[in-house]
Image (cartoon, rainbow, N blue to C red):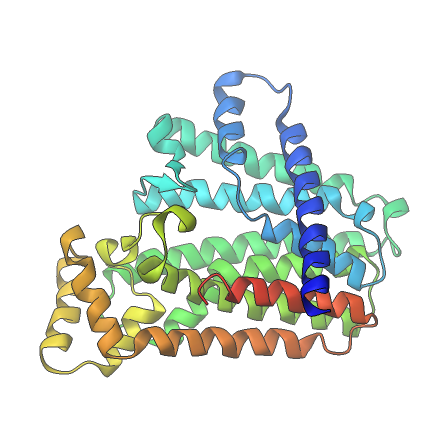
Length: 338
């Protein structure tokens, strides 16, 4: 029975993901000039889990609405997400994204910046299509939806700024890190669930419950991304494994290890900060340090903690089927590493 329900939700996810893919392509179709929109299309065709737009769709349904009310909003959040990825890759000097050359490597820096900006502009265009009062249970939700979208964008920019700031800052605490990822990653997922719940005309309790789910699953998702950077399969992960250490990023794993380390391990970790990163041939060495300090297992426990918080927030949703969809989704995300 469990396997059957899992297959049912996976099929639903895949069916809706394919619809989103088609609508994303349509959002860029027949636009001119090609010098702008061909690179933008390259980003979209790179694929991805499309987790954020699916959060919008699942949330609108859980709040009592229909998927058809939220397709444009779902496209909007995915375009916004890809805008952040393009600029993030530029700032991180990343070579690969989803197993493909990053946009600034495929084309050039100026093209990447402008194409990223175009994705953001079209995201707003798409969002506004779902904000007619005929599409909403309550027309007054339009302002709340736009405010939520804007807030998500602002917080993502603030989170990225903190992330870059941490590269130059010697003393970064785990609490500092959690604040940063709440903005950089969790705020976007929080916004997706919030917009979906608003579009679906949910009650105040339902909107709050779904919004909390997005926030906590977002925190779990980012810690897991940090973990995958050191233990993941590069072909499945879609990015260069060990990149965070090479760039000297202060991730959850690194900060936890730094807090626990003594002696030579402490010295090695402090050298990462001093040298602003490591060499590619040192990745195995630092992975071994993480394993010795039990940091990998502690990170998995932290992922489970925030996942449990996310699931606790939705326990009173009106439909068991809707609750189960979110349980399946959370379980699928955890199984990326287990």
